[in-house]
Amino acid sequence: MAVNRAPKRPRSRTEILQGAGLVQSLVSMAFGVTLEELQAPSRSKAHIAFARQCAMYLCHVTLGMSLSEIAMAFRRDRTTVSHACHLVEDARDDEDLDARLSCLEASVNNFSGDMSAFGEALALGDTAPLMLKRGGRA
Image (cartoon, rainbow, N blue to C red; front, side, top):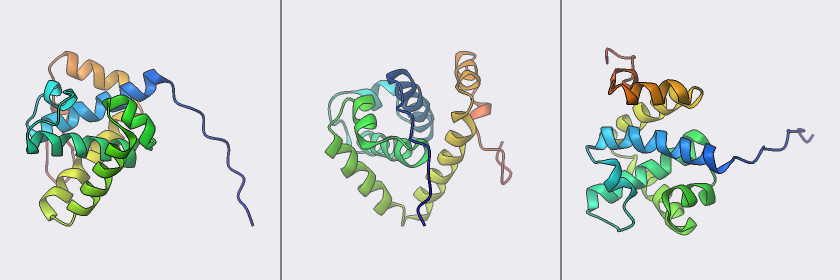
């Protein structure tokens, strides 16, 4: 028996860029790279490229963005995004990386419903709301 689902509403360019911006901000803090490095058009150093790939992966799995939407937001090709998602998924076998990505996923999910709270926190330089408040973490 087929399930009737409402058609998915297309995201606006603004929604895509806001979602990607949220993820990029969280990833830049978690991986110790700047937003400028994440958004640079060049391939960059390996640790910067991997942080960017993790950001692309998180956009896909937490925000449900299509590969084409992510490609537009990161100014990359769709096949580059696909490669990044596969690479990060395979790398999740590492327990430390898996734990870091799980915390980032939870953080994205906490903020994705209220982008205004995220923007206000960053504008004030407050990173406390970005921290996961489970498991003894502030």
